Length: 612
Image (tube, rainbow, N blue to C red; front, side, top):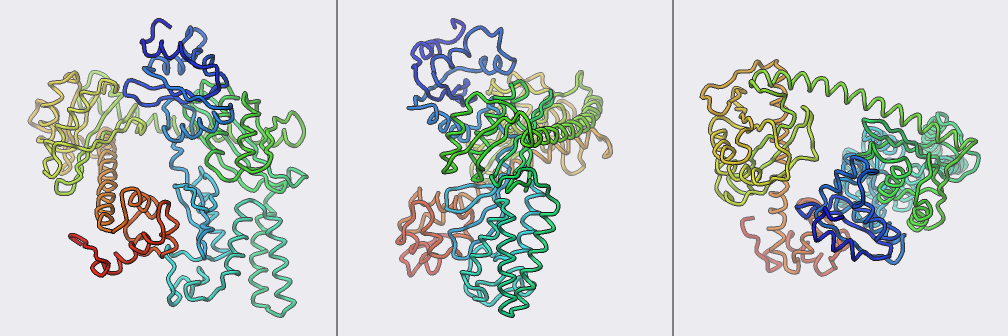
């Protein structure tokens, strides 16, 4: 342990004999790993012992640790819950996690609304709604939504106002609660049917539809009976495609796993009422070197920490180290006992084997796509190295772009391509300080590159690309040539003719438009532009929204933030009814009425909206 800094040595000497959570930090103070332990002293110290028995990933992690923090808990279960929350908060670089997990959508059913809606969302909040997912296959999720809306039409408008029914009603896509064409009780019955369908309880739903069809037929309501019959047939067709696997009616999720040098794939089968009602798969980061038990445990904590659909049992392909603690945690989240099994024989074992085979197949397909895209990238890199006369292939390329609106909210982006492929984890964005209010792209480029060149923790690039012509390139070279990156190749790509300029040369390089080299440069440039303008629009939208809300009496910083997060846009806040505003965390009736009064007539409310 003598090789580590004094701060770490002191903290290692004072570690408690208690359960808890530990956070590893790098030189920038960023949390790069979060873990839990039954005994903090034993677990944390094990990282700093001899590295002979440690894998490359652990050795790399330990080499980056500059500080560590521990949080003592009263039990291992409490430590597990805290670990899940901290991983979600910090997204540590070295934890096993779902690839691009933040992008996985859910299906949301807004049960708290008088006439609930159903729609996809990527933002899960404790607002009383039901969330189904996450869905790794976005296409499958949209197909599910289309099927649901075809079987059970619901309102699609974001804000319900009493008015005449719109076109959606007349073409059969909406029951028009706005025009009181459907009662609340009947509408709620549709929502309950949808929830049953999303939970995979198709048998129960079919019985209910058959009951309603028979009831309508007996009462001579033949048009309504026909409607129930058509919905029943559609569901029965879906059921016919499914094979019954388990005799009992208990719900199970079946976990399959496959791993290779290229990555790890998890396959989940959702078994409801004995049948596979759906499936999903997930690719994992930082898992290739881990044993199966650790991978499965990490996946269960991340996946079931997000989804609200926790079944009565999980069938696993391998034993996990903290099985009892995870089972206890899942049971608390579900509200009753959740059993984790590793079946050794019989139908359950066959299901796990089937999930494993599906995971292997999906991983093989992913590897083919990776190899195919990599071979294309290799050709482009070789072509680029020839055109730019580089001694070696540019493995790491960084591209910079500036975005602003007449000098306001000026931002810059840095995108990174590694091996010719976008490396989104390495992207950086900068809110520029020295040019705010002054539209000066040259000074902006100088500032962002100055900040980049001072950051010694970032890997050294092989090629720096500037979005712009000779002027932007000159501004960039003035900074780069005075830094430790002075010997790195720098080029700029001018938009007008797609000419490439190199430092120290007045004439551009006219790479053919069909050349792989130019296509690669254009892809990198366009990605830098997209990343910069997305950040700029986000800041501009936030500024505009908050600046208007500033003028509403009783709406302080916390309520402004809560309104922005809940509604997402000024238009949605303007149209929100009183009940929806009251539901926002931190809002009460008085503040909600102030918002409505402000947007109805700010002067009558004794308020002034500047510039609006």
